[in-house]
Amino acid sequence: MWDNAPLLRNIADTLTFFSVLAVLYGAAFYAVHLPGLLPLQSVRLSAPLQRVAAAEVLRTVRSETNGNFFTVNIEHVRQSLEKLTWVRSIGIRREFPHGLLVDMEEHQALARWNGAARHDGFGTSLVNQYGEVFFVEADWVAESGQALPDLTGPEGSSAEVAQQYMQFSRLIAPLNLQTVQLALSARHAWQMRLNNGMVLELGREDMQQRLARFVAVQRTEDRRQRTEGAAYVDLRYRNGFAVRQITNEKG
Image 1 (cartoon, rainbow, N blue to C red):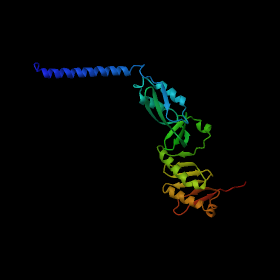
Image 2 (spheres, rainbow, N blue to C red):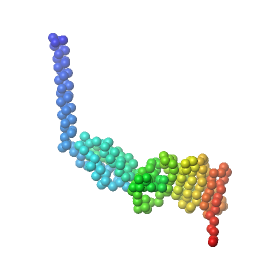
Image 3 (cartoon, one colour):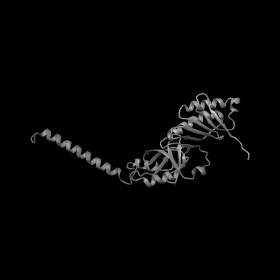
């Protein structure tokens, strides 16, 4: 082997190649970790924010960012931003040579959830259009003046309740009425209250068909008069519904 000149030359060339490669890698690694190389200087939002303050985003990024353009831990910054109130999801990418682009999706409040009181007493629980529960400041609902319906249901049912709320709301839209309360019981029975005070008992099956039938009756003027002033309508009948009228008692 030692008298094989071509083999020894090939081994030497190979060792030289890997040595140079290691030196170049070490130099590059050292260079990109230099604090003065391409420092982060800007944070840009992909779209204007409605709920989250841009200053709060910038403050969070500054406090959670270490390193330069190459070494900043994008995942760590993303997780920090997702903890901000009203933030649903975050996407971050580098913008050469000195910036970060933040793509932020905010929660859109659909309704209050399960009485709105957060268990720790320091916030209000809301549900968005995807049925995801999130928390905001305890006094936000009152201060915003936004009229939100109340949705209630067993733990883990927020997505189902939100979906049904939107479907039921579309069904009653021709009556110029709105759903102010929708409840799913532990036995999986549905009950809704309208903004005219009427309570509709939908039961556990064929809820949309029952509600559609009620709406069709209400859109017929002579039949609608039969339910005017009704406090409670039980739709859990195969071919109709039961009505309980409001009675005004004088005493």
